[in-house]
Image (tube, rainbow, N blue to C red):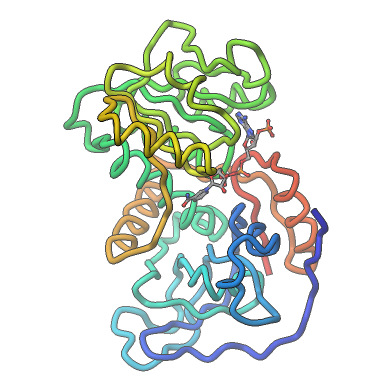
Length: 316
Ligand SMILES: NC(=O)c1ccc[n+]([C@@H]2O[C@H](COP(=O)([O-])OP(=O)(O)OC[C@H]3O[C@@H](n4cnc5c(N)ncnc54)[C@H](OP(=O)(O)O)[C@@H]3O)[C@@H](O)[C@H]2O)c1
């Protein structure tokens, strides 16, 4: 894939109704940003050119549109920008008040900027799709997190630990110790035969798989699942969608559940919850690398490589 990021001068955006203007301090990249460049969501996105990529940001509120009630100039915030409009790889961006949360001084801009898409996705996969109770009120579950060293996987492991789950995780050999520190009980190198087979070293069967890697067929998951085990697939292709339909039609207890993060009215409170976990030291954003905005193409190249450990951060 070509690195086609270009630097252009554009006016500072004006906040409209219920929007805040943020002077950005940090932005994090997600694989979806690359998908827009690859043209995957065409003809719907991008809506216009130049398209400024990235939607996960942290910074300081500098101006308010009409109707903004809960922020003032000078407030430090984390925001999820409109995925359709992007705007994060810039010095200033506008965010909906409904997708903006306060950032306490204990949470750095980079830690905060890592959270929106990756943190919300990890939270949604565990709680809504897999039915895990983060307050530990449910039964102790056996969870597998694939690609636990990635942006989503790192948060999924830490949130599953908060839920007191037994966690098996996969990652590359270089990240095994990191993923253990994040809370995984067992870690498999995905390049070994046991890792490729997703086999728990202690013989556990998984109640839920938070599947952040790609290209693993159902036949690999199936023998490792408990009787009611679910695979939550973050990147479902046509085969996964077919498997999902077959499992539903045949009333299979083992299921494949595709997940697509669509920010909704609950997203703000969940993002705020995640920011507070970071403040309390219960959640960490693993940072792969930080790049100045003037070198955004280096951050983009790292994202294209698919080998980030945690989040890639760009700082204006
Ligand atoms: N459905 C949604 O709404 C949604 C939302 C967010 C993300 N996603 C998708 O979820 C996936 C994960 O996103 P992300 O941001 O976490 O990606 P990421 O940060 O780019 O993931 C990179 C990490 O994955 C590891 N990895 C790659 N292949 C692996 C494998 N087969 N087994 C174990 N580890 C592997 C890499 O380790 P090595 O460097 O050692 O290879 C690297 O540390 C992406 O496909 C993304 O598009 C979907």
